[in-house]
Image (tube, rainbow, N blue to C red):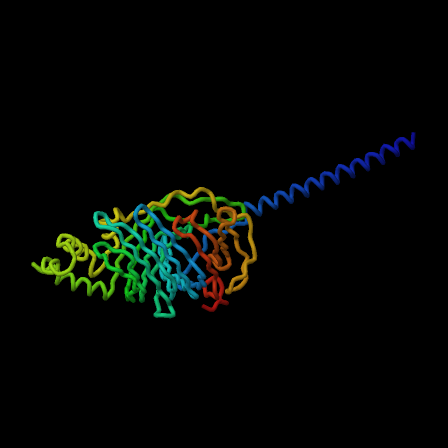
Length: 363
């Protein structure tokens, strides 16, 4: 009897040990799972707070803009060793950033003017030839860093080649060096948030449908010269006099002169688009959830090594690396047509910087 009682006690002790171990194991598993869930749900970062004077610099190996709509086509490819960005104004709801960069690149512009004819031209700008500068400001929404508007200035010399223009049948192959200053204003209907703040490592998002309005001006001494010559041509009797000596129809000359009168000496982009293209408002369709963030990586760029959110586009067609330590994107590479239909390629990295996030920067 004594042995039976002792056996029962031993069995109870063993059973209790097994149950306790099982309970501890289950608690550990639950705790581990809870920690993982908390990391996913709690380990996130809000939109950064920028201050006036914060500044960053990027090496932009390439950016390609490929825009096509109806009878309008524009392609731009550019690069710069130093794209400087600085916060110059902080308002209640916006950050205004000033940009400055000497650029190399080229563009192509093709369109058909209503009731007039086709225009086909290319341009090349080289920092080594004569500094061509892109500057201006970009405005971001304060709460989510969504893009609101851009006011861009391009100042320098362009080698312009006319391939085809209305009313001019002659060969225009030699490129012309054109000094110019272009102001381009882009305003978005709905703001475009590239990063869905607060950002964490379990997020998938898209971009809402929007549109953008394009306006601005182009100034050049060549436009001044063309305007002066055209004003002389518009004197009574001059067009008929010229039509009798060169192979041009006087009616066609009058139409061409009217166009030049409307577009020079200051070329108004908004007027040109509305009057000859059909409008200066362009739609950007809604982007489905093609942006995702499921991890963080230590990314090395010229400015240093930073633990960054790895934001992927379409499973790897492009990647954006956002560093909470720096408070901005430190690297962007790939094809982004699914987010911005006209941005076909970007490759940029953060250079040594100076910002209020820490004081070890250079810039």
